[in-house]
Image 1 (cartoon, rainbow over the protein chains, first blue to last red):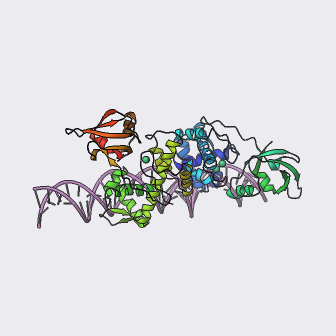
Image 2 (image 1 turned 180 degrees about the horizontal axis):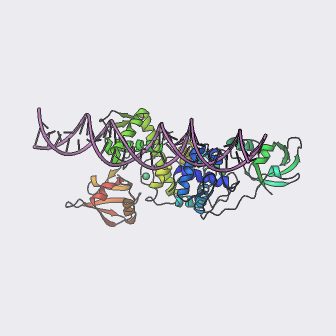
Image 3 (image 1 turned 135 degrees about the vertical axis):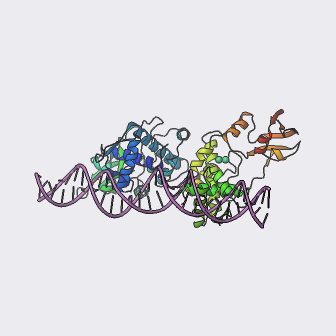
Length: 216
Length: 216
DNA sequence: TAATTTTTTTAGTCTCATCTAAAAATACAA
DNA sequence: TTGTATTTTTAGATGAGACTAAAAAAATTA
Ligand SMILES: [Mn+2]
Ligand SMILES: [Mn+2]
Ligand SMILES: [Mn+2]
Ligand SMILES: [Mn+2]
């Protein structure tokens, strides 16, 4: 239906749309590690196909069709990640790149059966919500640890940074999804945060606190 | 590692090599539903990469590397087909096209884990042997019904034609893998074959007899 | 063996997705 | 508001993989 490149652009635009209303050429270029001129080319093609709203120099937004396609790709990505972790026992930091390939397998019947096979999971291994077959999914109501106050109690439920390095860091320190933590202290000097988890204190930097999400 | 097109060419050449020693440009073109001139272009590239032995006008054969790559793609294809049938409950005539896409997912770690997850199956849903992670697999010792004599007894174990139409025909008439059949009579006029299966007589045409394989 | 047919290769185009370099539009600051 | 910096688009090129048409080689037939 859509080419690999088109799907990747739609996914990138969707992701960036969560942060800013109108997405700029340069933002997309950065997200996809490509050049602005290449982006402009593709934007014309996507606009032609009515997948995005685009007037030159004005940035882009997804049309309803474009958004539907993007959400479907995200659904596939997250379901495959869930499969890789839950059924094939990969670690959560190992699955993203494989899912980047698998998300482009085109059959929706396949993805619906996979969903059923796994019991319709609602979140992927990184805590991100999995859209259902109609494209509905709850927006994440999770908060970065960096924005909550001292004595806040919550459950580790997601990450903002999906890099292998960050996921491995969390794993190593036992900061994994499902664990209950309490914010004990915020160091005023460097905004480091001291957490209590299972009666142990763990200090994390501000960078980590920004990227680690909890459910209150 | 290799492009989609390269992988598909290697797979096609491997398949054709089972029948003829040296594979011709036209044979490959027919197999891949493309033009001879396109094949020639690709053959030069594959020879360049030392995946095939090629001198112009002389046809091609796979190098050891080329064969290894081809067998690996076949392994992936058949394991995914097995997964689709055994885990996601697709029918045997529905899985080929999906597997054509899935076989290009590049991770070997993934495919090895999938293999383990399914208990190291030895044959795919169509009775074709699945190469192990080292590329070893038994050659099919199955015989088309068309070549065995009257009173031969055997178990339906594979198909030569993998088309949806043929698989659906077999399904409809209960001629599925694992069933025990006996050749009752071969009609001299048109080489149709009358089989006995579970105390019922079934007549199949010569075309069907050629494409339906049994283990003796 | 010579003529004809078939197969294969070459030459030249096309589309898709990328790039660099240069031009145009927009944003920001003095 | 005018000049500079930044962003975005255009122009032109490239490589992969496909195509058509024509040339060359090989195979077949007379
Ligand atoms: Mn991911
Ligand atoms: Mn994820
Ligand atoms: Mn198949
Ligand atoms: Mn098969």
